[in-house]
Length: 220
View 1 (cartoon, rainbow, N blue to C red):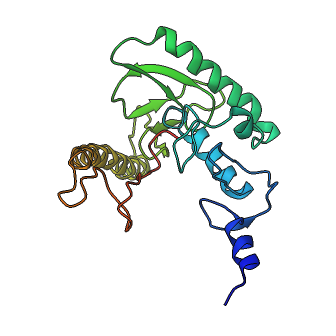
View 2 (cartoon, rainbow, N blue to C red; view 1 turned 135 degrees about the vertical axis):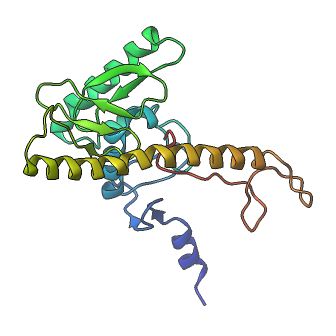
C-alpha cells in the first residue's frame, strides 16, 4: 500500500494533457491559467495546427478547458523561422476585424503566410504568393493538383486523369464537411436537453459531470 507521502507526490505530478507523459514542474511547454500542461513536443504539435489553419485556432485557447492562453506562453514555442510568419498572420487577423463584411471570412494558405478575403463556405484557395502559388483544400489542408490549359497527347491525358482522380478526393472532403456539420448540429441540439435522471445537460462522465468534446477544427 502506498504511503501518504507517495500519494501526495503522485497527486502533485505534472502530466501532459495530450500524451500523458510526466513533466518537470518548470517545463518549457504550454501551460494555461487553470493548471493544464502540454509537453514541449505536444506544444509544437499545437503550433503546427495553428499554422495549418489560423482561422480555426484563433484566439489561442487551452485545448482542455478552452480558457484563453497567455499569448507569450504560445509565442515562446515558436522556432526562429516561424516568428515572422506568425506576426504576419496575427496582423492580417487584426485588420480583417475592421474590413470583413457579413458573409465574408479571412482564409489563409496552408503553406505560407498568404491570406485572402473570400465568401464564407469557400472550400479551395489559390495562393497568389509568388513563392508558393499552391492550390489548397481548406478542409483537409492539403495541396490540390493544378491543371494546365491543354492536354493534347496521350501522356498529357494520363496526367489529366491522375489529377482528376486526386481532385475527386478533395470534392469528397467537401461532402464530408457538409455531413459533419449536420451531425455536429444534431449533437449540439441533443446536448441542450437535460438528462431525465440527473437533470444535467450535455455529455457527462461516470460521475455525471458535464465535459467537452474537442476536435481539430474547433478554436483553441
